[in-house]
Length: 177
Image: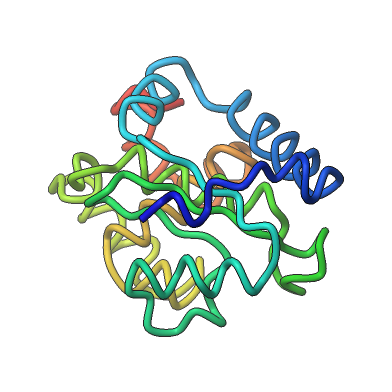
């Protein structure tokens, strides 16, 4: 399955490759050691989609129904992380690469719903995220809520602590800060 996407992005799209890698590194540097080790353990393969056409192809191979909305995803069955562009590349007006990458790294961290299925997380999510303050996607399930909260905690922990204190307490008690 992956051979189709194993092109060297640095050779075919060097500027985009550099942007993607630098953005991923910026996010990964903000993640604590324990969480980073878990993410590395949980990801077997990373695909950086060179363009929207490649992203459409990858998303279809993984069974994504609405590929146009897919900027990135983590497939827990194959442990594949697929990352694409964002505001910086013109692929999205709403999101930056760091936001998308932090969100997807959080899904990898939560492989098997090790965090998002915990009663303490579900209680915090129900009190602080289910109302939609982090968006419709975050309110759709504890798993999406965890990834959306993690994105905020990784990139703007002071905002996460001030606006979602119960979720932040869970984050800290889980050793993710």
